[in-house]
Length: 194
Length: 194
DNA sequence: AGGTTTCGAAATACGCGAGTTTCGAAATAC
DNA sequence: GTATTTCGAAACTCGCGTATTTCGAAACCT
Image (spheres, chains in turn purple, brown, red, green):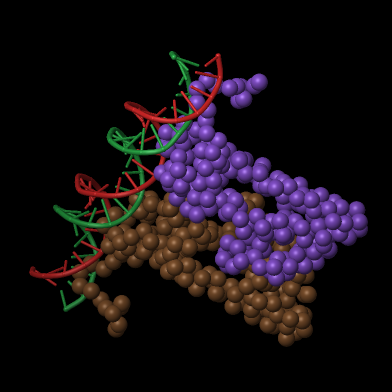
């Protein structure tokens, strides 16, 4: 009924092309970063023609923002009844996300955020906000159960809890093995029980 | 006496130009990343002519590797007599390094490491190795004092101890305030006293 | 002093990436 | 069926980045 769903005459836009473009953009971002991403590479990998790509996104910036905005972090239910259980689910979820492609694509946009406020806002909304909300809920429940005395700022807690995962993956280039994830969980629980 | 110190006839290479090139390269790396770094920008910011730059480094890769290799992490004496004291010095040192330019330049090379083994090796040797050595010494002393039972792998400990700092600086874009650094130190001490 | 090298300034060749356009074929609303 | 729109393929313009070269001036070893 509204403007976006109005059916236009003529041939309809291929949904397969849409998905192929997003897929190619995200994987190329993860591999080569924002500056290293080329429209030509997107065209080649997606198998789409240049006319098709440019009719949807006239600039590279537009394309990247659309690709990032298409990402929805899968929601998680972390309410297990204990701080250790909640953090365990939360940390494993983040670890899985890091080892997939999306998080690498996001990470590759770090320098670009400073130059592109819209990109920065999109990233915060899609990735940071959900994590902060979830962690805040975990801390609130722990407080109610008496497992922690005071609730630290969610942003501080997020850095303490997930920082080690990113460091191992991106600085050391080591896999997030089950053993390492377990260590991270144990340390996070001890840290928050101040 | 050896080949590198042989005095050549004619005008000597300007040491000021050497430093200006390294300085410009590192700051531009931190700002724009490897792909975003251009020889023209190095020439402009360093105030050096293109002939001067290219006589020293014929390719961009060569220039970047030289710039990274020119970095010497300032050594720190972390031996204070207690685990808390040692980690306090260590973590503050890393935090300062992150807020300076060099660490940002190194971070910007993350994607490039995968394509350039020589760069990867240089980075590990200059940045990772000294940190691991220092942390290992801290852990060994703590073990001898009986402050910890077992010595964890140095790489695991490094991620747990410094990961939060990088996360806050690079993911949240928040400053490493004294309060946050203090939290990180407290977290690390509690974590290692398993 | 003479020969050698580096210096800054500038011009140049060359390739690559962004963005546009043209073309004929295919799909679809009406 | 007809008009409209999208499709892939391909050619094209334009600017920018890499790398090279030329030139005269300046610095420096012997």
